[in-house]
Image (tube, rainbow over all chains, first blue to last red; front, side, top):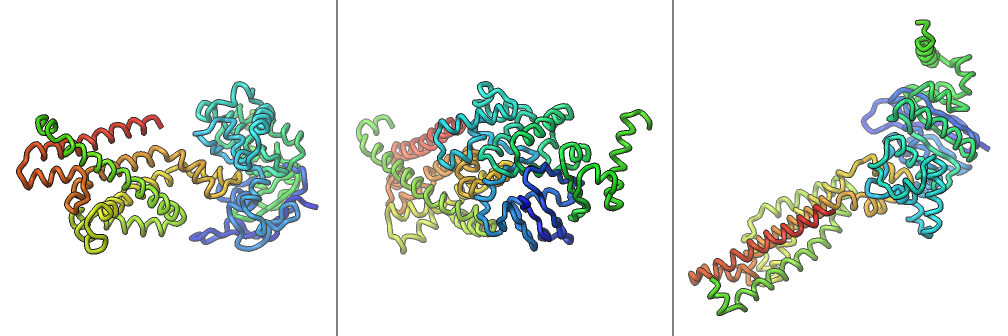
Length: 254
Length: 202
């Protein structure tokens, strides 16, 4: 059974003439690493926010783990889905440990359990717990902050992670490291990842399948090499062509 | 002036204590009401606009006129004074509370919502702690303004430092006028200073 199903999902924002998400249908299997690729305004972020009910669709259905999410309390749903955003959004008045365990503390976990979980997650995202747990977000670099964002999203051990351009504002070298670590984390945890990006290289590197979106439509949803071999339409073709021309630049043949 | 204080210490201390009481009671009532109204205002922009408009109109009514308007309703005395002072405070408090709470970085609030905090939890755990400076600045302004307008409350027999001023003016008693003005101004300056220091520590 697919872990997430989008069935004819449509979303239009008030005051906009066209659909942000236009009749999107897709099925995602448990344990997949799905990347959602498209330029800004293509609807990829909207699709992600429809998944954890930050938005509700105008029509169509989204089924998560067998349940129509329109019947699930949004707060309960969001605690089942990890959520990471580009700007990270750490809470500046809380320490790193408090940031990671903010939801557990609202759920009245006992202190020992929260301390252990925070340390465990800091190690998982590659930060030394004793060095980082009592710092404040502003004392961390952008890359370190995003690692904390990831740890915070993982704290309740969700089966599904929603990642909205998490490395979009991070320099190229750190970004490469984070991509590799994210793949390691995905491989080790057996969770389903939905990862939004506008970077075709990132999308094809990370995703075992890639959703290509443009103007709200899902143009193609397939494995990277299939998309390269059989682009569904002219838009996908041009996307691949642009990536190829970049590649030629690096090989020095341009 | 010192001579007057030595001879009638109770005539200076009494109004001062009354004044401080008036300010404290007004502050407590104002904060309780402003907190409730802020909760309402945070729910919708429309409610927020309506409340702001109402209280900005009230705020623009001269205090003596508002005191006079209330006499037929709640009579002379402290209750009327507290009502008027509380009404004025609502404009200051509501404006600073809602502005402060709304100015919290939307990215932080979206992250809080996205990881599964309820609206109330976002308010109490994220917005209020991050807006604490603006909230406290509003309270400080309200205290200072209450001390000032509170002197006029003596005109409807609400007691306080205003009685010294009004009596002094009526009987042309300079020490009384001076004590009334020095103490009310001094109280305002002192509390402003102290609260500002607390605010900077936040």
